[in-house]
Length: 257
Ligand code: ADP
Ligand code: MG
Image (cartoon, rainbow, N blue to C red; front, side, top):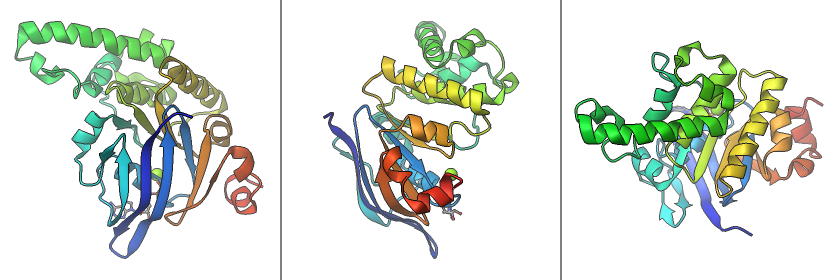
């Protein structure tokens, strides 16, 4: 069994009178995929905001590869190796596909993409290397995206925008990648392609762990090693797809039965 890289114990988050996460515990092993399903408002995205340092828990422990995450800034958490995509697209539409990935790399290069403009020589050389790596990342996620690397991000179809966000999140060289509803806005065929893409990424980086929030049952049935079901801020169960599909409450709420 691979080592546990993430451990969450009794995490609770409140917004005023609302308990958005209530005593949530789970762990994740290296190279594993954890799925999260649950109705709107169940606390799924809040969990990602907790893991990335945007929200602070009122109770609970969070440990990632031996580091405590509670009270750590979002920037430091990216450096520790956690990166994410958002439920709603956050691309820079006026920049090229490649530049969007370069921006994701910003935390990595010593001089940074922004300073390259002001510090021509040394920074430019670094930028060339970074652009090459950004190209490789695009290729890993989707050959088609790579071919469109000089196009404006705003011109991409919705499915490609979602893929580009994954490439950008990977640019920070994460050990844990959090995907918030990656198949949103995709049809069945596009979702199948996304499943293939995520599989390929994991084949190339077998130690990468993922947590995927999803509503599309094709993806949930296919990718995760384990699935957590959330409702009203609580983790109501966890198991394989075959285990959770047998539970009546899950069938009614999520499987359309
Ligand atoms: P999900 O992603 O499962 O649909 P969320 O995690 O986004 O749900 O939200 C869980 C609950 O927490 C919702 O009731 C939402 O309105 C509330 N919530 C999330 N973020 C905030 C915030 N910053 N301030 C107040 N309430 C919030
Ligand atoms: Mg959400």
